[in-house]
Image (cartoon, rainbow, N blue to C red; front, top):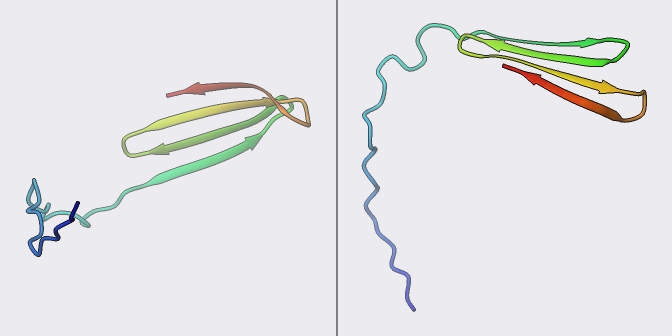
Length: 67
């Protein structure tokens, strides 16, 4: 069995976006400690997520996620 190498590079399926890198993108991450555990929140221009990690002080006892 022989493996042949090729000197040509594959053409991209889509042309490069001429606006890539313009503008701004914001992301907010917040971790909040509670008596029952930790609330982790992440929000950006397109998404919003929350994860509730319940613990007993030694191990995680429950997880609840929100989008």
